Figure 1 (tube, rainbow, N blue to C red):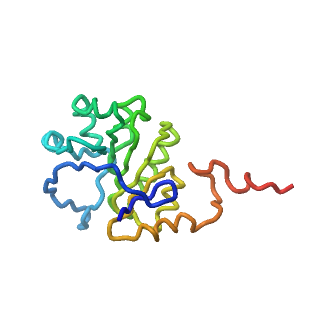
Figure 2 (cartoon, helix red, strand yellow):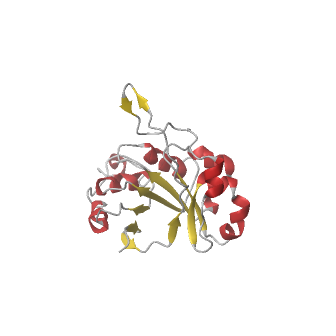
Figure 3 (cartoon, one colour):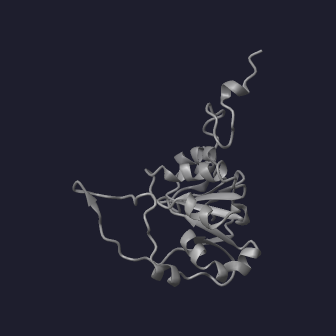
Length: 200
């Protein structure tokens, strides 16, 4: 069964997420503790990984932003048919994509990989894509996507949620109604509640 939530329902996933080939990374430590998060703007994909990324020859694919930038000509025909989207890792900047593409709405889907629950950068990336850069198509979060995050993902502009495989999509879907009225203004509701309520 699908774990994809979109438009308030659990739906089949027609997109394949393409990943870079895995390479062994050295364990990094700071003050004796393992560093779990890559720094924002840190380079992560080697030319060998980009060239070695296996992209399915047919079907709809979401490719890493570094692969899109380097192999755009190879994917141009499929992109023209709305069969190619891109995804960003939390340590990559939205500007990596916006510097390479003037019109983000050429992509039918942009994904943001949420690597670890404690990393808040995907929320900020979604807000930037929706507000500063005017992205209006499907914005998907995938990775360590858990029930308690969905309401806040939605507030930041995500409209597609690929729930972690070991979790219940039905339970996660219910969480979108955890709060009946959001107080603050956000991407999904611009005005704060005190501006929405008529006190007259």
